[in-house]
Image (cartoon, rainbow, N blue to C red; front, side, top):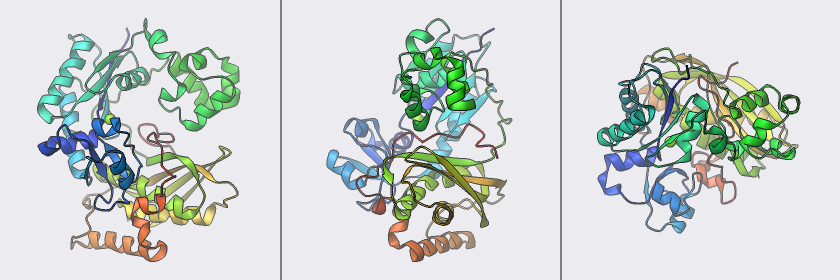
Length: 406
Ligand SMILES: [Mg+2]
């Protein structure tokens, strides 16, 4: 029997949560920005309205403001996003015990065998989330996880898209390969070089060619394109142990110096620190992966002086690691940083700059050391990011749920 999988994705999650907790923001163009008080901060997330005005993730605050003069800039509230994420899970768990999170704002649900029709469940989920949390979700409904996720991206906000065995060739095959889960920019570019542009092209390509040119990853993507994905939705409490928490980005313009790379690390590690705190984990090591302008990969790992879940420690270590190991024979197209060798923390530190707790002082200490080493700009993402190094909205390649295996 075919499974019924839903993928629910909260629309413009950070900005929507900000509007849900502060009704004055409702219906306005909102951007959640690092260093919100500083015109050189960068946009971390934006509302639907801000997006329509051209505001993009990674843009400097001043650029966003120029595009959208009425833009309301607010600082991020990661703890509140984590709370909303838990409440979303609680709602999903009323329908099934198979609920698997993917990031803070996305979830798969396996509702196979539920008496309600899949679309009715999806519509009810939308309504319940809107009523109880004041935010909207887009839901994809399909017979596997990959197409359910694709469906949740096809119509937003506050919508349902169903992809069936009968309809997937019509609905999915015309889309670009990059819409497929785990088809990052390098893979997309490589596929283009041998004439594969759409998911349909990939589905119908000679398997031997794909295997030869793209290896295991290519074979997996070709299966996905043909609707062959039987990976299960994890049971609540039985999600795969997280082995790493990583975040990557492909830069619109290549990075040419360690200072530019540092700015990207500072931005990427914000999300990693947040996720570690959410999962109650700390990292004992760090991994940096570089894809250069020739699309070659290089990757290095290092243990950290002490376990941490603080973004500043991670970005500092990532920058130091890249500085000692990368030769800059080529400029850098994409960067990924991962927190590895994870262990649980019994007493998670809340990242704050003003506390008196020794852990918090240590955070401040780490930031001070970065300032000493790289100058004040090192902790203000946009200062070095400048106008032309805007990261793409899409991660270079998201690690699979459960993290990258080592
Ligand atoms: Mg989302």
